Image 1 (cartoon, rainbow, N blue to C red):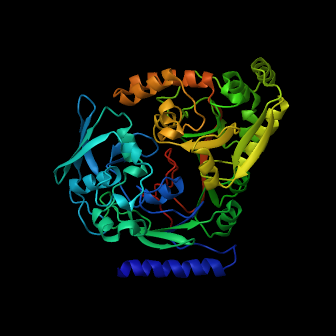
Image 2: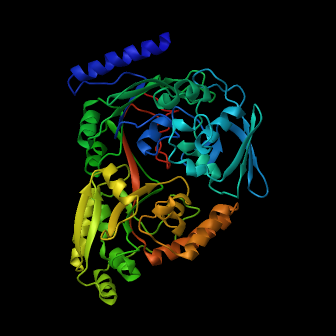
Image 3: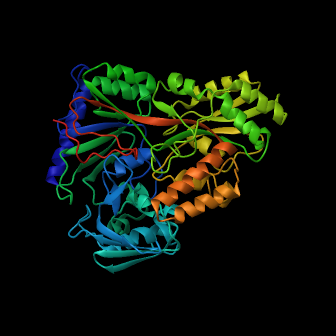
Length: 522
């Protein structure tokens, strides 16, 4: 506790120094990383949140049974040293590391693992009311979790479920301390305790979250003494803080600002393609876009290359279909993106009999992964006007936007912007393209797309235990979905970050998480 208090005193003094010093000489303290985040976290309970912004903090406080291998979306051991999978793909048995402790001092055991998953999945569990757990469906195939002994835990699944290990590596699979949940109940998200390389120190609302080095970390103590996550919602303010030395690392830099940092040797710019798709949900159920020819026309009418090069300043690539190329094994490289072909679009519109169609388009003001949604919406509106489609834009704040889109596009609303970042090629199409994923059935298929062949391919792919077989099914699915055009496929984002030049060993991850275990800052 004395060491922790000392660290916090140093942080307070240094942050005051940053505030009082002119921008040219401001500097954050040595061995303490200050990160400019895009928003305040909702909670530090990994089972209770869905936002990438929160995940970037949580991945440093907790471990899962497995994790994503550095620089990949392949899983490797974490709290589990090894595991076995039954021949039928329905039983997973994990061997836990010995001697691992949660930050509150309680031991990691198989019973603790069991507690974590039953808390999310069992409505009768005594601590289920500490939720809600919005991504618990990642683990809905679990039939039973059994603690064989202290260091061995077994998962029995209802059916083979190929994304299981990948979902365990996602933040919803991070392992929390049962003892801290029992102590703090619904307030656990303000008093987190994991097993990760850093442990929680302080959360000052709308100001900072501070995490401190875990000297007892099973993987070896990290070099940094502490990390301070500062919520700075305005992108221009984040940029000013980076230029003035108020933050060491900044994520989601606006495209127009990247060149400023690229030209200055005092900064390092990082960019990497990841599992991201920016698209338009099209109303397949009601209105002009219920006709496949109209949906194809939308795809031909939008100049995606101009969007990527001009609006997004080269920070993304043109998307070809529903699975991002970051999933190299499942991506279909033979797909050709819809070309920019206004003449083809007009031909299809005429054939469909909708030359004078008027469309309503939902646009969001912001949101993680949404890139430049207002500018992109305006450019898309202009492109569609060139082929005779009159588009009325309705713009909403992010949470309001989601409340309108997620329940399904209502009659009279034809299009909506959307972006997804996922950990497995199954996630987005399974949750947003199956007919059983219509919003009234609990999914995110807000455009009401339905194709029995796609349903069958997706169900078979998630049950296939052989990756080559899964890949073949996903590649076939992509061809059908691209032809059906339930969405307008726009862009795959190259995530970015900027750091002060003295920050060492930082790497972007294709998961979009911030793994700070190896980062140094003299």
